[in-house]
Length: 131
Image (cartoon, rainbow, N blue to C red; front, side, top):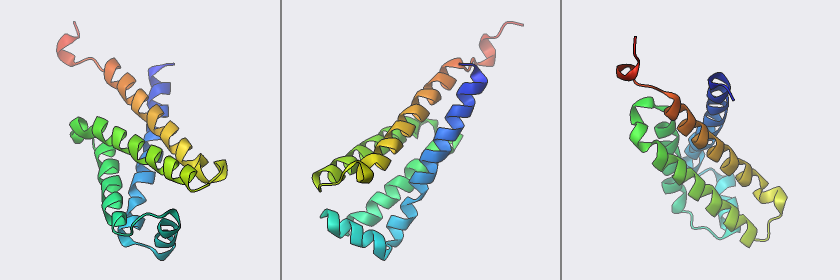
């Protein structure tokens, strides 16, 4: 795949992952519909603001280039979060219609991370370019 193709895949998947992370604002606000879902899954309500805050911070870390040192932690945080969400949904008797979305989010996160690494590898510092 060309550098342009890698860049396009990176930004499409990264924007998707960041959008999912920024949706953590809904957890922070503790919308009644989300509180109801959490109760049905057996999750405590006090986790909602914490998990929402972590998701929002992860999205910010992925989007802001100055926070490069936090990129990998944010990616792995999203992967662990959504694998955990998949596990909870499966344990509560949910079918693929329930946990399929979380698997798609994990896949997008992995693709975003791998293309991030590929782009990082292809960037050559100016000091190494011979003119």
